[in-house]
Image (cartoon, rainbow, N blue to C red):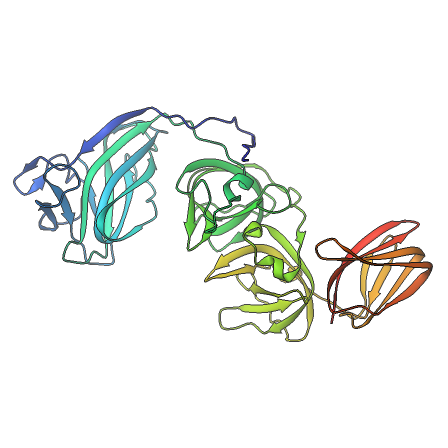
Length: 436
């Protein structure tokens, strides 16, 4: 069951009413050019705008746009009236091969949407949103094309541009991410929504946001316009997308910093094998006492394993030259690319070298060693340890030991990963261990 979570803006159910600004199936032509197009901001040559007379999506004609160059050319409407602050939805059908995107010129050049790469023999429907910066009676809506390939290049038909009084869903990150679909695709794929959270990592034209700690609560944002800082609480209006199986937010049309300097969500402590789980994509996680089994490759990717299975680490925000055989505690958000989930340390502080004796808790001053554990485990504390409980990673009790001293040794431990709970007069401390 999905749930909508209010941010600091009101929840609004997705209902919209549309008023059309432009609607054409390219049925009317004067000479060799379509009526209503080839505005003042057009840069594509007239002989590269061709009437399509067979196989149109709607009616008898479509338009073919030819630009084989890698730099874009504009195909624009005749001047129309737009209202400042208003969103406009551009709906169109396209086929052929090449890149196409949309934009709006009102009194200034608006931001271009991301390119859609088309390689299809069948008509495919797309929509993109543009926003007017100011009132204008001479605005032009833009189709930008590049890299077209014959014989059909890019064919365009049934273009509708509407002004919409949109009331857009405010959706929690959890509900954007949570899915039972085997593909991992978001149930909000392709939708424009509002969402928000705390920035947990930022840089390289992107950032991660998270709302609360735990599975499904983090997400990657592709945004090369805004540059939030870690700890910022933000609200964004965006489009939900799947980029090679990475759920991401893109096409940010509204960005608001609510507050700065906020505490970050607590990283989820995972066994290394559990990093490879859709539920933790985008989430701030931590693995502990994980041995480096493969040094960084040419892409800055390295492998760690705490005994439960491999996890990949990637040097995207920082560079760390991990050493094979060394054990590390690693913190960072989980990213997905080229078929692998990857922890992204944000700086060198996110990679901690594990020493032979690891301090667990400053109040009890509890230490476990050796690290990694072999067939025995030494435990020390500055308070009397009453009992020690050992649990498997699925929560089953594997052993319970009575100590009644400030130190003790557990023998006969089998290989694997466990949670150790040390109970003292000052309280209880839990820690994951890996037995070799």
